[in-house]
Amino acid sequence: MKLLMILMFALLGVLVLKGRIWSFRAQTPADYAALSPKISLKQHLNGVIASEGLIYGPNGRVSNSFVARMEGTWSGNTGTLTEAFTYSNGKQQKREWALTILDDTHFTATADDIIGEAKGEVSGASIRMTYTIVLPQEAGGHRLRVTDWLYLTKSGVIINRSQMRKFGITVAELVATMRPDSSSALSPYATMDAAE
Image 1 (spheres, rainbow, N blue to C red):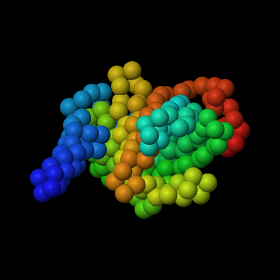
Image 2: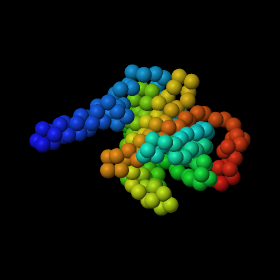
Image 3: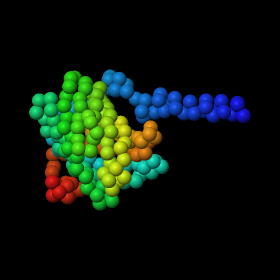
Image 4: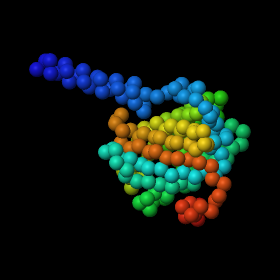
């Protein structure tokens, strides 16, 4: 019985270690410092951005999808990123981020559904942001810890991957693309423009 308990704790330790060393959570901005093209908040989160993505539930299956229209504006080291989402279930959501660049690599961000400040770091071709979000009441009103990564590709498209956790357990994941969009007449975004 003692041997079985030791083996169970050893297995649990290996699983925890795997999660800390060989997983999405284990990556750091330093991992991407040498990668190019270099991402810039002011350059790549500026102007109109078209986005579309998938949301995965805790079972790893797609639970929702969305299209979004974003727009970034900057004045010195402060910026605003407005986001208007339309989900496949018909719901719409808006968020406005207030961004503040602190130095060459660090920034903070705030939004109405974020508790306190999001902490961000720019490194090479990546941006990492961590924060706590409060879901809408119709989605349970839960507080989730979010790790949000943006990766700039050579074509200029940004791939966004986010994991949302509660009590350290992944309860949702988001994968999305973000690309510059100079056309404001794209049909998937027309309803969002009208809602503004």
